[in-house]
Image (cartoon, rainbow, N blue to C red):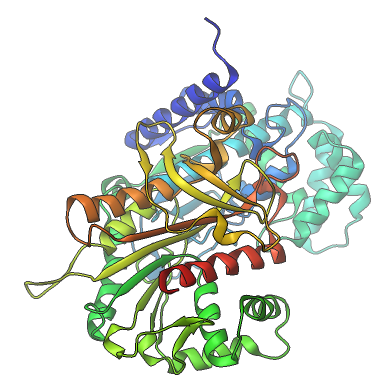
Length: 555
């Protein structure tokens, strides 16, 4: 019986993860060796949407390349050796950390050859970076093939690119159009496509030029093919020892609970919200400090803050919040998840947001714990630790958790960027773990605001960069009735259900609220994650979900 493309793709994902886990346990591997070739073969079979034309033997995937480079440390394309490490004390060294703009993590370049990348977000983060690196090695092989003839001789296009990169490094003037003409042959793209890509890379912060990236990727591939100087990825012993043991999640959660105890807030009604670190504080304090009387006014303030904020509304909100119950907890643990505490007992108005009354008694007023977005499995690690009672000096202090709310970014399977998804269950891809739950939020809560709203199951995927059209279409069109995909939902649910239904750490009837806004549509050409961020289109859905969470909890 012939397998469908969806079945082949699922098998490829399974091979990728089994291989990655094996290589991680082994400690190191060569990307162009037998093990590395296994990863490359599986990724080529899968052909994820985010990597576009990765399977084309000549054309470089330019959008995917920019997406990956923004999530890796600057200059990693120049390094023959990449070592994934835990937090091992390098933050106290003289080495300057390199922090990728779109994936906050400390990275250290030891010399021209070696890049150390700190992994503190769990297995999902390791799988994610290995997938990105595998993509880079595939593209480097294309550059090598396009820059040499069948006998391995270097082409004139390559020699000219080398000269242009030398000039760029020396700060000499560069004829961009001339350089792009030579580059276009090496990357298998038209001159027009090359010029457009060069400009996109120029605009991106903390990313080297396209000329430099292509040259150094190709240089290492050519040297490996001609002189046997192999590239290598390795994993430190400390990283392999710590993974899966909640080391960073424990540190992160302890600090939050310590702060709650210090301010005598553990017995108060606690509402945990996983979201960004601006929408909750801006929604509550725009009403408190600026007197916004409806959602539209709050949205207008959020939009102004996101653009130029000429009226300094953001500063007014910050100053007012600091004096009225707002506690900021920037991350110190290594999780890269900032947190905030909002004690509503310090608010001046009797309403939390327009039309939502607060209890008269200060001791009954809610406390919000807001945490930034987690990454994949990290969601379980951090939530599991946060929901445990706080232990200090032999005494346990349970948390009075009333609700857990998750607002997230997700890929949508119906509709487009900025539309909303309201999940009824989370289906964990590649496992038998399915989490149906009662969502306090409903599709009807979001209707009438000019955004598309879809309700159904959400697929929690092993990695957004490992999804292709065949798998997603299967989930959408089959009885799974999936409306979107994300990486954290099932992990959050696992923590919530084990804490409330099994361990008894929190009440069994804890309220659960989930809603997502679409950052991309992986089934639509030009709308994948590699096509760019939501920008201002993300303001309305982000603030609408935040507003509805607060309204639903207390309305």
